[in-house]
Each structure stands twice: as C-alpha cells, then as structure tokens.
Length: 168
Image (cartoon, rainbow, N blue to C red; front, side, top):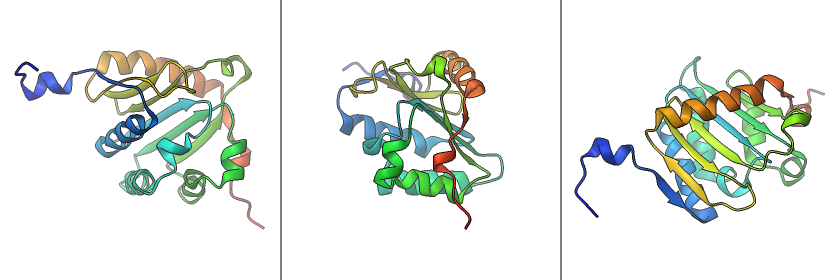
C-alpha cells in the first residue's frame, strides 16, 4: 500500500463483501455521526442494526441534542416486529429524534440499501440480500447524490404504524 496522508485516506472507498464487514462499517459510520443518520433498505437489517453496540451508539446519538435526527425508510418491518428488533423499541422511546417510515409503492422494487451519515459518509449495497458494496467516511459528492434519492423516498413514504408504541 502506498503512503497516503490522513485526508486522502478518509476519502478512500472501502469495499466489503460480508455481513460482518457491513455491520462493522455501519457501527463506525454511526459513531462518527453528528447531526443525521438516514437508512434506506428492505427492512431493519438484523445483523447490522440489532446488536448492542449499534443500539447503544444510536441511542447516545439520538439523545445528544434536539437537532439530531435518525430516519429509517424501509419496505417492510413486519419480520422485524415479530422478531422484537431492538431498534424498534428504541424508536418507540425516542419519538422526537427517531423515525421509521414505510416506503411508497413506487419505491418497493428498489433492491439497494444505503446508510448515510451527515453530509459526508455512506455505506451502499446494490442488493440488500447480498452484503457487498462500498463505503466511505468522507465522500460528500456521493452522499449528496444518495441523499437526493433518500429525500425523494422519504417524502413519498409514510410513518410505519406497526412500529409505533401502543398506549393502552
């Protein structure tokens, strides 16, 4: 490997091809978040998001201040609800900062998944069934493009009522 400055290394594209690597990268991305975390995918991935390290990290992030925001836009949370996914329980406790939406019909056929952190970091898989893709800790142009797509998906999505807390 060639010698690179830390700035060049932070711009580096990281390729991954396993759930374990995706899980590790998702945690590292969440740990660097300051303002916003956005996710789009088929469901709340249990390997990446239903583990103690990620739950603790995202909980601390969401409680950091009133301006932090966590948005998950997914096709379905049905299996996540059945499995008792810890991210849903966290979202039910942190309703002002944490939002889970169900994607609109026109986005249901999109097979990709991506995680965006602030305006500069991302993790992207072209197919949510195969945890292989790329990530970067500092790629504002790539994030801007994916953020436009996420905003379109989010703006057409609706709050997922199956993840809301029932007050009985």
